[in-house]
Image (cartoon, rainbow over all chains, first blue to last red; front, side, top):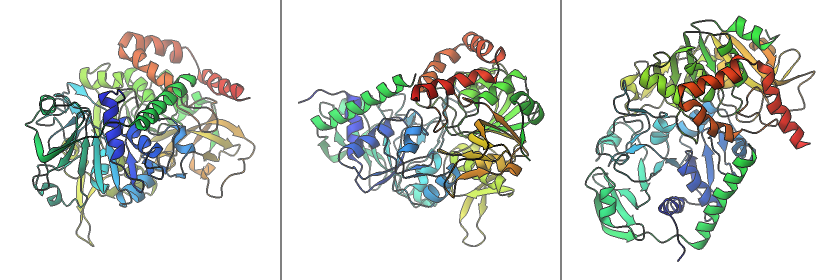
Length: 257
Length: 286
């Protein structure tokens, strides 16, 4: 069996969640790596959309920013940002939104705004960007985040974008018709919402990871599904494609200097 | 009506102390050279609007030009924090910075509403999160036809829009290609505008029948500044210098290293320094 890092397992597990006919709104960073890995392996026809307005883009290297030239050059077309958010996102044409965050709670609400109080933050984070409307306008949401006590918290300092709000039917009661977070992929496990409570629940554990480890890296008492699977190990091909993608990206960024 | 001028003249005439200014660009075509000219001319008390404030806003904020920031994502994309922005918010250095924080959808809609001459933007958004609790400009309206509750924010009508584009012709018609961002909307929503371009040509080149062109009578000052978007990029001219974005993290982390960089690269230089970035790439391509 090939050796791999937890971070690689996370990206590969996230990529596997995507299907060939998905239309996916891609966040920068981890989501971008996962979405392009899916495109380069089992989902060659997936439609990737970045908020810079690039539709059906097929970058050869991972963009550092959401509007890199590589995205535009390989897209079927590039629309203006107002059109992106109005016709494509708000218009309900995007099936999956792929997000990351700085903090998450057990209902998969996300904080990318501040750590500490808003008016006197301990750490000022970049802010919501497209996330508040991606979270409510896409058909469903996948989230990719490495686990840790500082990021998996009992209570968010700020709710930048909603997941299942306070659980149960609280999301629907706000008038939101989309599903919200259906998958949370971490470096340790795969979570899905409980059908009733909507609490994110472990349904699959990555190879070699213990329940205790998952609990130690979460700020709330973690729920495990009645049947918990073991995530299949990364295949040789998945690892090769992912590593080659990162190597190509690093080479290209160094050359541009 | 477009007026072809120098960058110093354009900024002197269009950007005034206390103005609301939108230097727009979504990763692509960010008007760095024009931002540096605003710093050199020492503008104060500006309200800056931008969906994705990055390095040039970090520089304007760190040099004390800005008292208020309207934004939806403030970071160094793929790298991390904007240290000057954070220093202003967390420690009030070099001065306090008031924030008006939105989402991208809200800001894109507000620019479009401004360009359309409407008083406000209406969209489906801001549901359930905390931004409406910290931004009093976010309101709810009810659709008179369906009863659906929607979000509303005021339209943007900046005093000045500042953008960079690939080309203008001698009459001042401006052509933009690639990632378009909200630049067209920002110019049409603003009272005045400064447009820097890679080159001013006799005639705009052969183009798609639906090319994005700002006709000369919709723009103010047009200035030729080759390389003027560096370290951002100009599609068809030069790529984004991702390494400079990474280097900025170290340059901007401390106040002293930031000020030294500004002294050496902005205060004692002019817009002509940008030409080498454009030229370097053109020569490399030959």
